[in-house]
Image (cartoon, rainbow, N blue to C red):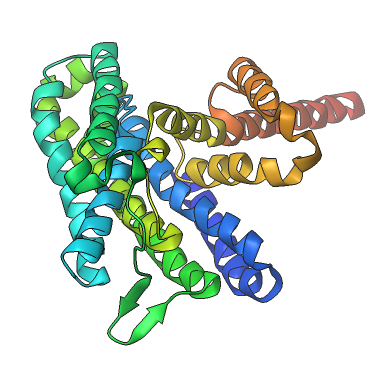
Length: 328
């Protein structure tokens, strides 16, 4: 636990340093990439709550991301609601949808729940695509205003960076507190052994719904930030493939570790920029990398790194002991 917490805070401090240097050195294009990386990180962090902590595989996260984006777009463009209220409403709206759906879906167990969330994200995507009077249908919704508080408008990439960064750090701290709380421990008890958790008095049905709802609220907030950043949204963005990518990012970093979502998101969002000459083969690189990771490091980069460090330390200790025996 202490190592987990230490790694989380080291990466958080590093992120703070980057927050100071990136706006001063990066171009507008790279700022847009970084902004999208942080928005994606919030969604991957939601996957950490529902899967990494509660042990429930959900492919509905992109759907909740879309719910948040569409709530913000509709409230700001059609109803004239302030951006701040729209941001709050997006998180709350996605949480309400998740709570209602969770009441039904968590009657299912194990992989059956995961399969049902595939249907959920497809249903939500269908609503976005076909409810034209509200969502704009295939045309989507455009002319979404930039985020503003009073007369202060965050319309540039730099100002958007600071807004998204503050929200990302806030949600990260909330998640860290949740991970150490009694509620978080009950989530992890369900993940490790649901039957044993029930015997200890943990209400698994209620706690799984709570985890699902909290995770959806993260996605709703991320969707709102995305709508403000892009100023245009359409249904094609919020699909099953995007949810699958969130899961891959979490598994890459390490689904059992708070720092896992940071590492996995950063790598998979920035790889296309690092390997731009190999853009045609990027999906091949993803696929091969994920397969190798699952074989060599099933607990992700953090888990694999810890095991490698432990092996090196044990070998070092063995070598030291052997040397002392030789001297004797």
